[in-house]
Image (cartoon, rainbow, N blue to C red; front, side, top):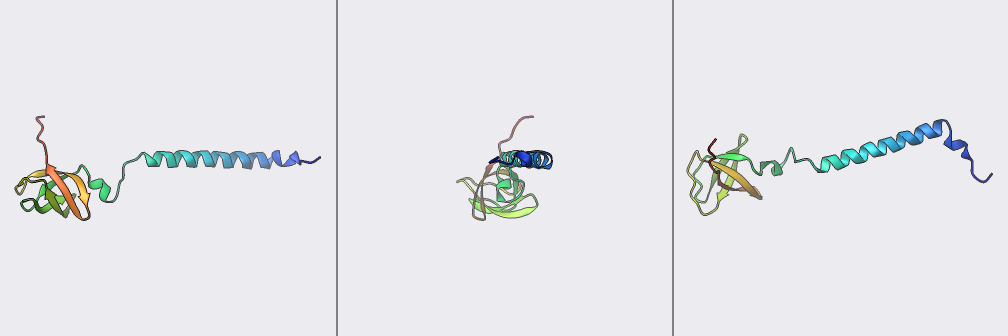
Length: 104
């Protein structure tokens, strides 16, 4: 015979199935991880609420998750103690806007 089919019996089949299962599980895990939101790094700051520490006119300092950040607001003056939302990150400066008040 030209092809030795004995490889496809016994331990060869078990090994082949195990490799295929591992490949499928790995592909599923990678695909799921791409859909998740970041849990560390600068990207996690987007959308976070910050408290103004020094008046933003238009630049100042804000407190986000226990850390002080340099921040810049758009054209408006925001007083100390006000809550703002992080909308973008420029280097080490956060761009913020005043948080909208909702009636709950």
